[in-house]
Length: 442
Image (cartoon, rainbow, N blue to C red):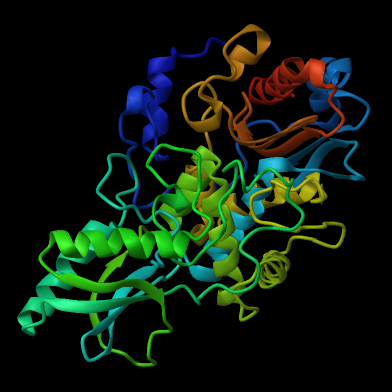
């Protein structure tokens, strides 16, 4: 059966996803993602033998190393279709973000927003209070979702102060919402100094980057945000005396001004589409807070595991230490990765649908924009939606496809034993596996 051209897929997929376009165009927001599980199963049911035949060539590819596995679940009929190598756990790399983001959607709700505010700190004093907005920027920027900005907060704050006859203040900043270490002890030692990851903070701007577009990160993101805010206040006619200093906001203090983040649903879409490590770590802390386990790494992981369990997912074999998948010590079974997609597609959990709408589309968006472009993998272009995972020697792909007969499959495929010299070959093999599922009569 012939597939329609790529342009047709763009039109079709834009109706159910936030579709990021090449060349810097903004993504298209979707306010009510479609329910992807039909009332009754569509088409002929895929068989274990059929899926095994479709994946046989990929599973025999030596580039995947010795520890490789595949797990395929029929979402329409609620059963496992095929699995191999799935009895053990894998280093998931960034596919772990599926667990973090589905937990955030469940624990917080897709419409929840995070507030950055300025409160009165006493006579002539104000406090900038971080609410854990992972996408807060200094100034307006293009793209989806529309972000809260320090510039808007400064303008509103200055207006409120002038209305009170105040033109000079001292400035404190409060990032106490999150607790515990700002960096993960299980990350590689170069991640923080090289800017591969940021020090997680409830108050930062541009994810702690010292200059927009630069990888270098501030050693104190909250202080850097406060300094930037101070300059913006001055530009709005408010003098700031003495520099910005840490200060706990008084309980019940009056809010002079505030800005709200995009919704959790929109943030989840962004994090998964762009594989945003820093955003994922912030969401992990929020899961900890929402489940009353605290805003630390430990609290976040505990909250994540509790939330996944409530969703009916078995975390018994998993070892999870962060929210982004940066640490190699994470170990996760493939059925858990595919399970996040499975529950998000379930008619019982429409609140989780943003997990699906943010998945990169093969050949078009996010971390899959430059994949599925050649050979048999090309048959998956526009049909596969999946989260990627990549570390040296580690490659994974987890997401969903519809077969030729119309059945919705959730899948996870991974290897954490790839020889470095075979990196591109292994990545292509995973693409071929997903494409084979999408084009399977099975």
